[in-house]
Every structure is written in C-alpha cells, then in structure tokens.
Image (cartoon, rainbow, N blue to C red; front, side):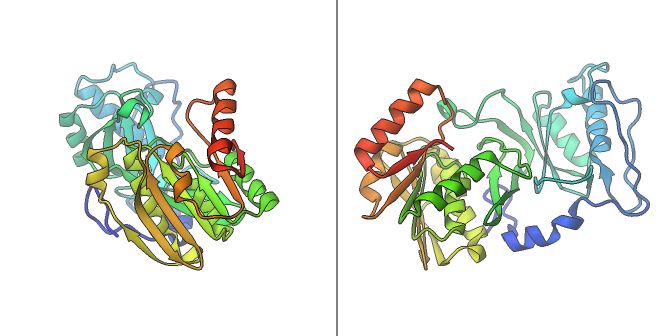
Length: 331
C-alpha cells in the first residue's frame, strides 16, 4: 500500500494510532514558542536538540523564507503564511512539537522555486501546496502541489472507535478533526435507530461516514463520490482500516492516476471492493446512478453535498427516496 504521490509505504491505521501519543510530544528540553499569530514573528525559533520544533517556530521559519523570497510582506502577520496540516492531523491536547517531515503547508504565497527552498531549509515540512482559494472537486478544480508530498492521514474519533483517513491536500477538501464530530455522531445515531442492511454514503469524500457504518458492521456499505481522487482515497482507506472492519480482502480496480486524469463522471464505476463478513463497494459517479448497485434490504443513506441550501436539500432527499427507497438523512 504505497502513496500515489511519493511512492513511500503508507502506515496502516493501527500503526498511526499506536505512534500518535509520541508523534508531536515535546522532550524534556523542548520549550514552547508561543508567537502572536496577529503579528509578524520577531525571531525564528530553532529546533530542540531532539530535532523537534513547535508549530509556531516552524511557521516563523516559513514566514522568514517567504519574506526573503519577496512573496510575503515583512509586516505580514504569522497567520498569513497559510494553513498547516499536521501529518497525522488529529485532535491534540497540547501544542504540537513537530519532528521531521510531519507538516503539509497550504499557502497562497509560494511558487515552485520557493517551495523547493522551503523543503530544503525547513525540515519539518513534508509538502507545499499552492492554495488556489477553492474547494477541491468543485467545478473540477484543485490546488497545486508545488514540492514534496501532500498526502497525509487524518484521525477521526467515532463512537465505534477511531478511523485513520488518508487524503491528498491538493485534490481533496480539508476536514479538521475534533474530539466530537457532529456528522459522525448523527450517522452513528441513525445507524443505531434504523439498523440497516445497506448503508449508502452517497457523497462520501474519502469515506468517513461510510466507514462509520463499517465499524458498526452494517452488512453492505456503499461509498460513492463523483470526484475521482476522493473515491480513490476512499478505497485506500478501506485497506488502511481493515483490521477494525469485518473484511478479509480489498480489491482495487482503478489507479489513482486513472481517477485523477478522469476526475468527474456520471455513470458509476466500482473502483474498489472489500469482501468478508461484510461487503463494501466504492463507486465513482453521480449518486443518482447508485440504486442499481444496491442489493435488497433495509436501506439507509447519508447525503452530505457541499451546497446545503435547504430547498436544494429537500429536493435531493425526495428524489433519492423516489429512486432508491429506504430512509435518508442529512448528517
């Protein structure tokens, strides 16, 4: 199971979770560098002798280089640098101290040249992404990976146990995890109320809500997304979390490159499938073409589109029930 960007082996969920408590922990010699994000940094904190540095210290180092490259004003506040994405991105109880290659930076300021310099001179950085001020997947657009690798795992806490979900920062939208996720909680309640034979995560992204159903051992789960990169990572995340699911093997029918090159399609195509004590399908296509893939049984569908205008949501829910039946909810 290798990263589609850099080719390195991706750790399974149990490995990520097992190392999480120490991943961003300071050593006894580490000192916090609490800089005011509303002001430009007045110095660049150096890494500790253990090789780790506070997140503020890392961002101050990035600020200094972008200023030196002429891509950021010297009086720009620290917060203007961009969005830091820890790898793994998880709920933390204290400010993180970063080891090498543990941060993906999404910034509107970098160029390919400055991004390469950032990777060379800021050892905590794993990848640099040009922030195009968009939601990846909407209208077929993405951010741009400038240097390094921008694939990172997110840890989601669910009532049935933790999940580890990989995604690519440039092609998949960010979901910042918290101790409690309202969408996850709503999905878990709906499953406990309906006890479905079939669960459909119709706008799955990288698979969060569908994998919640997987943890609850729903016999048949379908993850679907019209955006190819998200559907590919949903299939990968089946493999990553296999030990927590009642599945024995996962088949992958399309490569990341194939789904990246043809990212939007209407007629659904199964791009991954898991078999064992439960069956899981990952499809790439419009949600309206999913019903023929579904077996008989009590169905529960989660519809979580980007645009949640109430009239539009009501229309989508009614249309889904007409073509697929069963219960439907908006998480």
